[in-house]
Length: 319
Image (cartoon, rainbow, N blue to C red):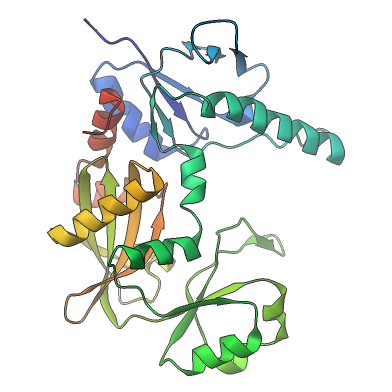
C-alpha cells in the first residue's frame, strides 16, 4: 500500500538546501507540504484540537496549495523557518503577536510525537550551547582545545597569555549590522593587551588555536556520515569560500561512533560537525551546528547528502 502521508518542510522562502531535499523527495513520489511560520495569516492557517478525540492532538495546517492532517504526517524537516515579526504593528502589539505565533503554532507542532523530526527544534536549541557542547564532547572522549568562557578580564588575559595563539568566538551567531553593513562573528585572533573592561558586559569564549593543517566538516544523517576535508590555510575557512578545496575522506570508526553518540545524547538525528586536523592527523573537536549548511558541499564533492535526507524523511524512522 502506498504511503500517502506527507513530509512537512518548515523553512524560509529562499532555501536552496531544502529545495535539494524536496527535489529528491519528489523523485520518490513522496508528498511534500512546505511552509514558513512567517506566512501565518492568509497564507498559513493552523487548527488543533485537544481532549476531544482519540489522538492527543488533531487538526490541520493549511497553505494555499496543501491541507495537512496533523495526525498523518510522515516526518518533519525543520530546516530554516522564520518566525513572523509583525512589523506593521506597534512595538508592544508586535511583541504580543510574535509570542502568540511562536507559542501557538510552535506549540502545536512541537506536540506532535508521531512523525520523525529532523531535527526537533527544542532539541536543536538544547544542543546549540557551545559550553555544553564542549563538556559533552570531552565526556565522549573527543579531544577539546583548551577553552575559557568568562566575563572576567583578568581571567581572559591570563588565559590568552598562557597559550601561543588564542581566538575569540561568539557564543551564538546573531544577526548584526554596523552602519548598515552586516557583521559576521569569525574566529579571530586575540592578544592579552586587547582585552579590556568591556569583557565584563557578557561572557566571552576564548580558545587555544589548534596547530592544524586542515579542517573536517562531517555531516551525519541518521546513521550515515559524510566527511569532507577542507583545505584553506585560513584560521577560519568560512571567510573565503572561493579559496577552499575539498576532498572526501573516510572518518575513523572511533570518531564516527563518537559523533553518533553525541547526536544521541541530544536526541538529534542529524548534525554538522566541525573538527580540526593537526599535523599528525589527530582530530580536534571544534563545534556542532545542529542545523548546519551542507548544500555547497554536495555540489563540490558529489556526495549524496540530499538523497540521504530524503531517504530518512521518507522512511520516517532512523535506521
